[in-house]
Structure formats: C-alpha cells, structure tokens
Length: 154
Figure 1 (cartoon, rainbow, N blue to C red):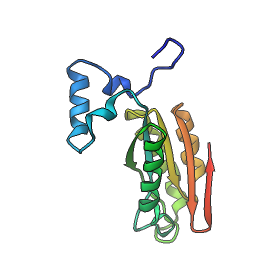
Figure 2 (spheres, one colour):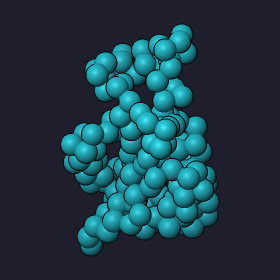
Figure 3 (cartoon, rainbow, N blue to C red):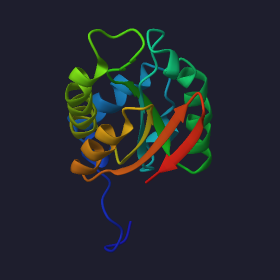
C-alpha cells in the first residue's frame, strides 16, 4: 500500500499483526470465512432490511446473494448485517413513527463495525437510511428494490 492509498477502516480490526487482530480474524474465520479474504481487501457491508413481516422486502434475501457475488467479483469481502425493517402493511400504527429509529440503526451499525463501504438494501424508507449512511462517511450505495423495480443511488 503506497502513501497515497487511503487506509481501510477494516484494517484497524483485521490488519493488525497483534493479539487483537488475531482475535478479530479468528472470530470471523469460525463462520467459515477463509484466511485469504483477510489480505487487505475492502470489507463491504450489506445492510439488509429483509423481513418476512415486510412484504416489500421479502425478496431481499435472494437479492443479497447477488450483491455478495458482485462484491466478491469486484475484489471485496462482503459481510451482511441486519437492520430494522419497516413494513407499512403490518406495522402499527404507522411505519412513519419508526423511521428515525431505523435510520439510527443503520448509522450506528455502519459506524461500529469494520466496514469500508456499504450497500444498503432498502425499500420505501430509503432516504433516511441513505442520509444516515452518509453521516458515517463510509462509501455507500443504496439499492432500493421495491416490487415496482430497482433503483441504485450513491
């Protein structure tokens, strides 16, 4: 890595040659992540709002597999993480009351974990999650995938 290449956030977790780095890598390896993925490649979080209680997001589980494949092909290490899912059809009295909580969930999950970038799999409540992702200064792409189509925003 030369002086002009920015240091990846994830290297503070996985790139250290000390005991802490060993522990962080070990905890991930016990999930089946091979050693060669800790070679300094960027860790890309996939923020998934999948929920069977949110019909608009029920297809996100399958969509996430495609996103993971794309991250691997681009040279990154994808790590999926769940966040609060808001479904207007089942959430009472209204999902509007929970939008700020959901966006805070996204922001703090990105900030607290070893992520160099993030792909947000969101639905109609995407604007708040994208704003919160930008606050973390992480590279973020929002894949809004509703029943009516897919939109990508960066």
